[in-house]
Image 1 (cartoon, rainbow, N blue to C red):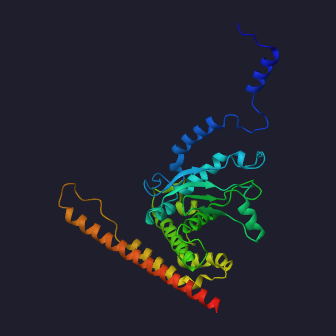
Image 2: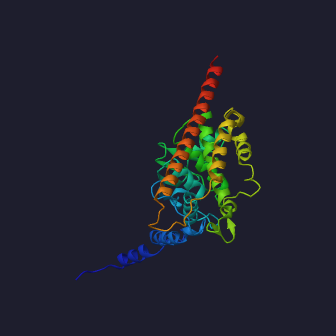
Image 3: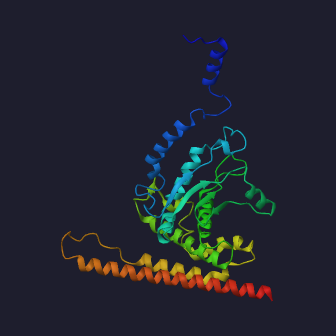
Length: 320
């Protein structure tokens, strides 16, 4: 027979009690599992019934910060990790982001939330007069985005988060903030904005009557002249690195012109009878699509080469 002392009994009871100083984290694992299942069911509601990442070119994992990463106990006003996870999920399934990932055949292992407090890189950047909003590890192995405001009381505006993610994706190719980097970023930005502009008329991509552009924080008026919108957006960002968007204006307009032409192409008809004489037509469609893709890639390569040449010329002038 095993004897239990009163002290042992008291310790066992104390161990089973939840910590009242922890807000709702006593069953964190169970709640996280339940929430992830709920997120899987509700992910279609971020952008509409057809929302999904590409099966091949995608963000493989999503990680939000838990209370352990805050450096102190979160308060009642601190957005929960579940909210941060849902926001990362929204970014990963953003139709504009999906288009970028598919177009460039990108696979990012982890899309995570940047530590909101204990982040030495952010603190170092702030001392230089800026604020680190995200970082890219090993050219896309992992991308972390700063989701929360500095006071931790709320989440940053969605359109800013989307721009930050595209910025970090551009670092997959170019580490320095030179003309080549900004050209690539601007062209990706154009692809993002044109996708949302095109979906404005689609009823399949609406949530509670809102278009994807409205959900992403863009008005119809702002999307009327996408090249100018991008140039205006880049003015302040490039100025921090001693550059001006007019230096890459031609590359931006070239890519936007390509996207305009692609959007004006007649849609592929889905009314052909299965088994009917549609094979030749299908071959023509595939051939035309291949030619269009090759032309677009060549134009992007020319634009990037021009940006690289300008960057080299700028370095040569500065060394004189």
